[in-house]
Structure formats: structure tokens, C-alpha cells
Amino acid sequence: MRGAVRETSVPPGSLFLPVFVDPSVTEPAPLSSMPGQFRWSPEGLGPIAERATRAGIGGLILFGRPAAKDAEGSGAWDPQGSVQRALRSLRGKGDLILATDVCLCAYTTSGHCGYWKDHHLENDRSVEAIARIAVSHAEAGADWVAPSAMLDGQVRHIRSALDARGFTDTAILAYAAKFASAFYGPFREAEDSAPSEGDRKGYQMDPANAREALHEMRLDAEEGADILMVKPAMTSLDILARARTEFAHPLAAYHVSGEYAMLKAAAARGWLDEATAVAETLTALRRAGAGLILTYYALEAVESHWV
Ligand code: PBG
Image (cartoon, rainbow, N blue to C red; front, side):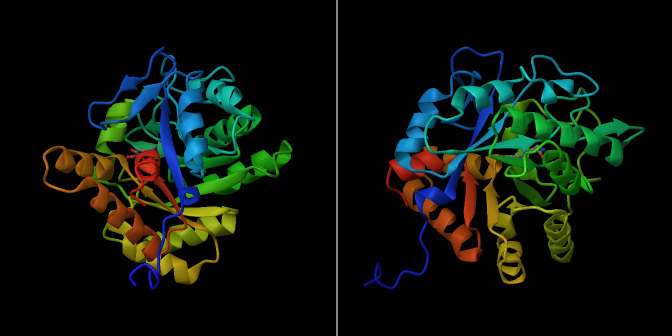
């Protein structure tokens, strides 16, 4: 009876797995604050792509690291960069969507998502670099590029840079409403991308603001975003629900590193039943309006039949 009247499901194809690519590792390196997650070598993603294909999840989103950081973050658009190498090694294998995170924070010495000068972010200069990264990912075979820096105008710049080079079919998954959140902590350890000075409050949103979140989503929609993403996920259910009535676009929720870490930590202590907690979480995100969910649980949830 409950099955017959169930309103919400979590199809495997709606789930996307974030993966970390690190040119300095040869074997998968476990991440201490994200049990079950690893940093992978650029050419070493074959096994995870095979599992993803077998599970039928929607795809992977790749996060890279440079061999060395510099002031410009030039490793981010290096054709021999970690993400570019990973894309070339995965391209054409399996039926996965290959998305890439487009940002500077793991590549710049400042650890900021754009160029940091005199205690603030230089928006317009940074946006040029962001577009350059997106083009280099498209050249290496990205299906979707996902700008995550929350810079003004980044979607418009990326769209026109891609189109100018013939990448008219490369879609933009926009981190449209991204809050300055405590829940990115474990990710910053994985990516070694914490800011060296200051914080991200000058460009990521105040978690107190819902109207502003919808405004940011509207701007990205107008600039040409194909999919609008909200982040973090569990603390943004109201944003998802409101966005679902306002936009016709596909909506995505990013169930971020800290949200994963909380569930893993509680489950490891026997304080939560992991299977039910994960199913309830992913179902709630879909119920609120997310069509797509980026989650570190993507493979485990499907392979263990939790959803
Ligand atoms: C890069 C980026 C971050 C995340 C995704 N892209 C970190 C940040 O903004 O500090 C967080 C993802 C997660 O916590 O799982 N800007």
C-alpha cells in the first residue's frame, strides 16, 4: 500500500558522484574526514567509472588539484592538468555524463575562488580565468561545466566563451545559490582549498537569505545556465521548493561533504541507521524539488539498494 501511493522516488540516474582527482597520487588515497571517498590519480578513474556505469547513476563531477599552486591558478586550465587528463582517459567509456567543477580555489595560492587582492575578490578579472578553465574542460571532453565560484557574470562569460569556440552543446550546471557554509569543511581538506586569508562571505551567500538565493538563481538562468543548483542541500529545502515553482529549469541539489561526513560519523557510532537515514535524506531532496542530486553517497546508495 505504501509503495502504491508513494509520491517520490530517487532514480539512480538522478544521482551524480563527486570525485577528487589528484596528480600526486598513484593509488586511491583515502580521505580521513570523508570515509569511503578517495583522491584518485587522473588516469585511475576507470574502476569508479565502471561501477558508476553498472549502478546506472547519472554521471561524475570531477574536482581537480594542480601539481603546484600559483597566484594565477594556471594549473586550472593546463591541458595536462588533472581534470583534463581524467576527462581524456574517461571520454567515450560508458554512458556517464562527465561534469567538471570550474573554480580557482584549489589552484590559487590564496585559496580563494577568484583573484584575491587587498582583502577582496577581483570579480571581473577572475571571471575571465573562470571562462578559460571551462573552455579547457570542454576541449578535454567535459559534457557539463559547473562554475562554483559565485562570481557575478560567470555563467554569461562561460556561455559566450564556449559558444565562440564551437562548444555549443556543452551545458552549464550553475552553482546558482551557494551559501557560505560550515558544511564544506571536509571538502576543503580533500582539496586543500581553504582560503589563506579571510573567508568566502564576500561572494558566497548569507544562509539567512532566501530572496537573494532566488535572485541569484534568476540571474544565472538569464545568463544561460542549463541547470540551477542549490548548495548545501539539507539546509536549503525551502530554496529548492520555491525554485521549483519559479523556474522551468532542471534543479540540482549538492549534498555536500559535511552533510556526508555527519551521516558517516553518526552511522559509525551506531547512532543512526545509515541506510534509512540516507534514503530519507535523498528522498527529501527530491520531494523538495531537486531533479538531480550530487552526493558522495551516489554509488553506495544504489549498490546497497538504499534507494
Ligand atoms: C569550490 C567548491 C567547494 C565545494 C564545491 N566546489 C568548496 C567551497 O566553496 O569552499 C564544496 C563541496 C563539498 O563540500 O562537498 N568552490
